[in-house]
Amino acid sequence: MTSVAAAPPRASWVEPPLTLVRRTAALSLVELQKLRHDHTELLTRTVQPLLWLLVFGQIFARIRAIPTGPVSYLAFLTPGILAQSALFVAIFFGIQIIWDRDAGILTKVMVTPTPRQAIVAAKAFAAGVRGLSPVVVLIPVALLLGVSVTANPFKIVAAAAAVMLGAGFFACLSMAIAGLAGTRDRLMGFGQVLTMPLFFASNALYPIEIMPTWLQVVSHVNPLTYLVDALRGLLIGTPAHLLLDFAVLLGATAVGIWVSGALLGRLVR
Amino acid sequence: MSDNARAQQGRAMSVPAVEVAGLVHRFGDAPAVDELDLTVAAGEVFGLLGPNGAGKTTTLRVVNTLLPVQQGRVSVFGLDVARHAMQVRRLLGYVPQQLSVEGGLTGRQNVAWFARLYDVPRRERAARVDEALAAMDVLDAADRLAGTYSGGMIRRLELAQALVGDPALLVLDEPTVGLDPIARDGVWERVQAMRAERGMTVLLTTHYMEEADELCDTVALMHRGHLTAAGSPARLKADLGPDATLEDVFRHHAGVDLAASGGKEGIRDVRRSRATARKLG
Image (cartoon, rainbow over all chains, first blue to last red; front, side):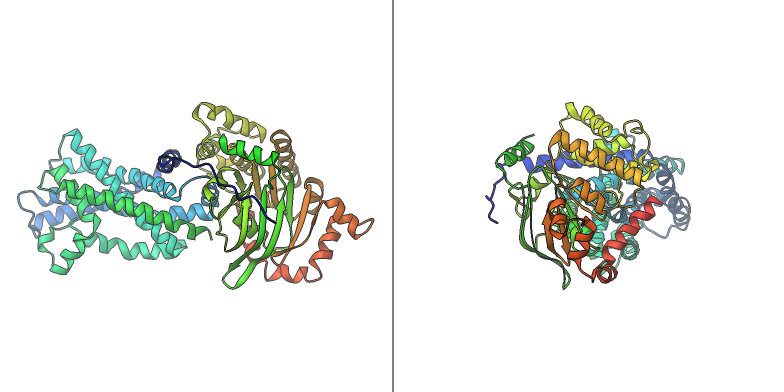
């Protein structure tokens, strides 16, 4: 059996990135359509961060245990809780991809001319959108508690972008773990193990300066720290390294999309 | 679409739709496919038959680029599957064994989604989606959530998803398993009508002998990872005797250990059928 080895027509160099963008958009649209049919999660997701702000925040503000400089502890905490809620929404997002695999949908999409990175990028986008929903509830609550949040629309849009990038990165981390773990149960285990360390080894609850040195090192490689820093700078007006923050968030998300996309094939073997 | 134009051209030059040579695929140490050779001519309906665990699904999954080519060579319309996976995917429509649509989307949204993944131009999209829905007779239910569909409707919706990209090769893995006889006939009538209209190649696996006898131009019997017989149903039957049925041919070539192999080697397949049955139930 000898067949003529056919070579496909040469595509120009713009073709792959263009396909990546187009497919990500098509799959993101499906994620939005799915979201429209199910709102319950958007509400249940806001309960936990509200408790952090209303209970933990109020109590720690009263005992004045944590030095937060010129801003109140509640003001300091609000961006931290926003970042935390994005992390909590996203860190179990790999379950969605395992669910799609078990339902046979992932298989069907992977047989279409779609780059694997587009599949995870769309999921990261969906995580970003879900990560935004607690913001809509938390910011008015913070305002009621007397926190002065910026009214500058540009800063608010930039903060929303930061939340989406952060949630997108943690969703990619979760999907990469899904590719390695393979099953929902194992992924749940890894998610549980990761969430709290990521949260505590960041500047979400307390400033980095009061941490022991080893924890300071960990928190500097934790993308959550950069998300919190950006949100504090944008919403509360504390000094922040916005360029560095966005560079880290963008870079981490890009690497996350690439790596989790590369691991996706393992899920369907 | 230039890729489909290529496929048409391929057909005219009589390049086979699928060519598999010396394919070996192992899961761990156990070979699921063992030195498999087969050729699917352009434009025919080719049925892969065999007991559970014979390697049918694995073969389809290598042809459709889901599994890597571990050893051997596989090409689709002359394109090497290992080297040009993305171009091969443009020529394919695939319906897996498991019933799988997005239940939280409407039927129309489910098909429009795949139209986008196959680069159906925006101007034609709405019309092409409706055309595929109508061809599979689910247009009336198009604006209902797919989660409310019956098993037969889901399968037809999946065929609409696979057909909206105008594939040159339609790959169907046990397309009628778990469907009642009426739903099964419904699926087949529509696949045949589409094929008559568009002249695409169909590669399928099935357990139903009458189905294979009636629908396939060529059937190939697979057992323990390789082909034991291939040819037109009429020829295979004639080779065995004047009154032989395809069922007899199947038994003859799979041998007495058919029942035994259904037990142990079939676990992988059985598990998947169960998942499908659960969804249906």
